Amino acid sequence: MPTPIAAWWRIWTDAAQTGLRVWETMAASAVVIDQRMPVIDAGLRNPWTADHVELTAMVTEKAQAFAKAGDSLAHDMTAMQGLWLQAMQDTWSITAAGRVPSPTRIAAGNDRAMRLAAGMIGAGGRALTPIHAKATANAKRLRTPRKDERSGSAR
Image 1 (cartoon, rainbow, N blue to C red):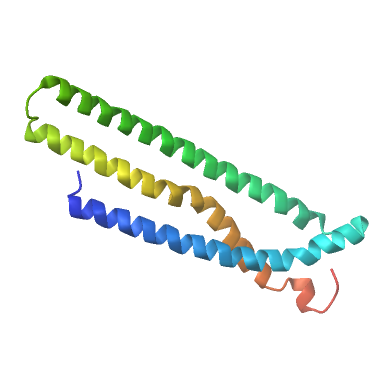
Image 2 (image 1 turned 135 degrees about the horizontal axis):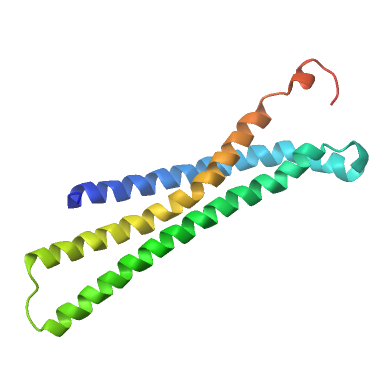
């Protein structure tokens, strides 16, 4: 069981890292959109010469990243619901007992509450991870000119 200070520190650093990843994802998305719009335009103008590999990747990579994000959120929500149910059971049993709870029981309740708070803060960051990874990787890849573009030949 981490100390309360360590738990709060983790919560704040997780929140800060998630905020940073949100901004990085937005910046990467701007680059990706800027680079892919001409590919979409060319595909609409002449489907026979379109970059079908890139057009297909636009859909499949998003579907995969968002599916992983959804799995992460579902897993985290299940864990948090379990913690919430335990916290409610503790509250009901303490209330029904009609006496002051023991220090051990108070500490266990506080630990559960901290894990619940950390789980809620961390869930968004964990869900964002696959989306962030794909967006930043695409931005890096699309910023780098392809081999055939560097040589001056058209693709």
